[in-house]
Image (cartoon, rainbow, N blue to C red):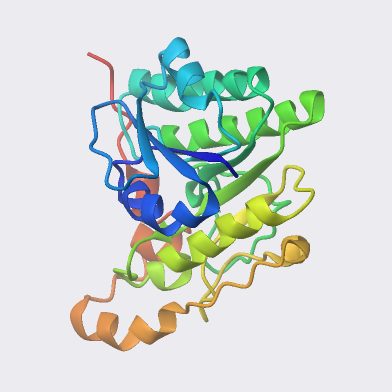
Length: 265
């Protein structure tokens, strides 16, 4: 690619991916709603509030691919979720449609299925069971991506990101952990395959403990290499084991099933 756009470049994943994905394009355009410094000659910055249609169009212009990590990433006031994850995503897809439909990796969330029990293994055809308004907005995003594919041919990888950190931090994340390297290798495959379509992909490493089945996207050629099991002894030694009746031990979404519904001011 000549130019890859990474939205949400100031977030936890964005800060890592702007380096790990730099080899995918001649220029990496990073965007955020607040000013950021570029770090390499091959980086450029686009100031972009997702709710600002014109700013989104400027950020997308000239891009050959988009890794969309931006938006509200947790429980928040509904108005903020609407601006970042609903209006903002609509703006992104309209901008892509107006600019040659660059392929998109959309960072959805495991919380779209958060109310499933942890003892149930899921494939991508399982109906969504969102665990909060943030998760509902990600369900909207998945539906929007599918509609733009069916109507206009816009290709999107809908990646239901598990817990993307340098290492798992608790017992639940032994099943949901997605390493930075595995996310990067998934992104490589998303932009490498000649035809993508609009698949739902579970964003999870090759963990021994695993609730999600990615066999339907074996054609993608993505084989995650990391396994949370190497951290199990450390977690067992340092993290108290939750009560079996605690939501973090019951639901795939963990404690997010009890997040408050924030009222707007």
